Amino acid sequence: MSTLRIDHVSRWFGNVVAVNDITMTVGPGVTGLLGPNGAGKSTLINMMGGFLSPSTGSVTLDGQPVWRNEKIYRHIGIVPEREAMYDVLTGREFVLANAELHGLGAKAADRALATVEMQYAQDRRISTYSKGMRQRVKMASALVHDPSLLLLDEPFNGMDPRQRMQLMDLLRRMGGEGRTVLFSSHILEEVEQLAAHIEVIVAGRHAAGGDFRRIRRLMTDRPHRYLVRSSDDRTLAAALIADPSTSGIEVDPKEDALLVQAVDFGRFTTLLPRVAREHGIRLLTVSPSDESLESVFSYLVAA
Amino acid sequence: MYDPTVARLTYRGLLGRRRALILGALPVLLIVISVAVRFFAGTDDQVAADVLGGFALATMVPIIGVIAGTGAIGPEIDDGSVVYLLSKPVKRPTIIFTKLIVAIAVTMVFSAVPTMVAGLILNGNGQQVAVAYTVAALVASIAYAAIFLLLGTVTRHAVVFGLVYALVWEALFGSLVSGARTLSVQQWALSVAHEVTGGDLVTSDVSLPVAAVLLVVVTAAATWYAGQRLRSLTLAGEE
Image (tube, rainbow over the protein chains, first blue to last red):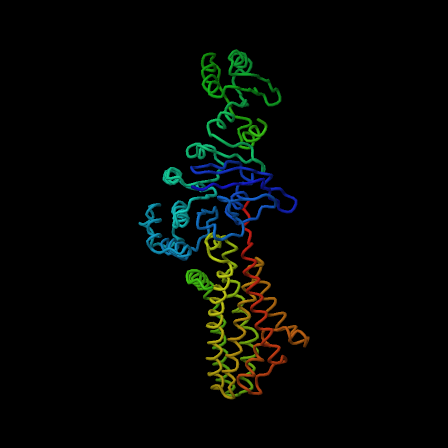
């Protein structure tokens, strides 16, 4: 059982602050590190993995510093985001090399390859692997020494749904065994399926952290804004405002559209098509006007 | 200090298809030149010394050194795969020392061996010319590998800087400014070669004690500093 402690960590590159005074504790089980692209997730993971020194603050694993302490890697397994991984080797040669660097042998390598179900392709060169196969071999290389902390940077990027499910099962199993598993993602649904505990990073700051359901509620309960065009905007507006799920409507003559603000997201999504059908109105455009991740996250920061 | 796994990964990378072709091209060129010279000019000790000194030692050895020295670590840092070495409980100086050994071995094989062969073709080792330049190539291989390995850990443009040093500093400045010759791996290596063979065809501007001390100090300092650099190597994210 390992606990990773991030204590008032900041990191800047020149004038740019990538990570701004983050404090968090990551314990056993699966934790999702969620945030839009460019939020500082990779910078934070690099500091957690000892590949970047914090400008201020400290990162420790069970009290031991991570930076400039190569012994700590007996306990840490790392799955980097970057693709490069000694492509001239076969999968097995690569995993075996990783095992040997930990002072282990063929047995550990074979066990790790079996865990990720890559034995069938272990004698092919890595350069011939698909994205998902590479990801699994990377996983195997991180698991050879049975680490108590597993750090994964955007592990699901570019994977197809089946590969994604396999990896999720594996990570869930790792978390269930009492390992501390932390993975980063910019996709809410990924994190939702896998992690009970999430930490949200926005613009280098720690925006929220804790139980997933609480944060999900914060995200879905916020007012949603839609841009709607229809065959009869004013009739539609009158019908929508009659329902409590709609908190405001603006007629925008320039855009020739309605700007609708909904407070109850679930109810509004069923209300809109029903009301339109009842009044014989044709919906021409329904588009969320602030559905980008950044706006979801910035709402969280404000909350 | 030496890790066989690091060594295996390093030479597998170094002798990957493309780099092995470049490493092999210059020695082949040297042999071709030697055969041509022998065929057209016959056996001449001075000509043999000119070819080995002017092309083998002054051009081929440093270029092979740049390719092997920077190639032993630069590409891994560049593409990020070095993370698989760094995320292990292996001492950073051990990684550097191992890579140095591999870089030295590769440089020696691709520079000293062809130098010896070329020398034998040119004048059958008359006046010990072939042996002298082979010794010089062996000695230079060590220092070049250490210097360019350090360069590979310090900058992403290690190959460019390495070639500038090898060709501009050693070849151009060395021939124009005599002071530059004191700080030239090539001259140090020649000094050792002169001592070993005692012939007059192989001479150096640097005395043996100075050359020996500089060789040891530069090689040791470069290796030590590369280890320190690797300890605090930073892998910035792609964002």
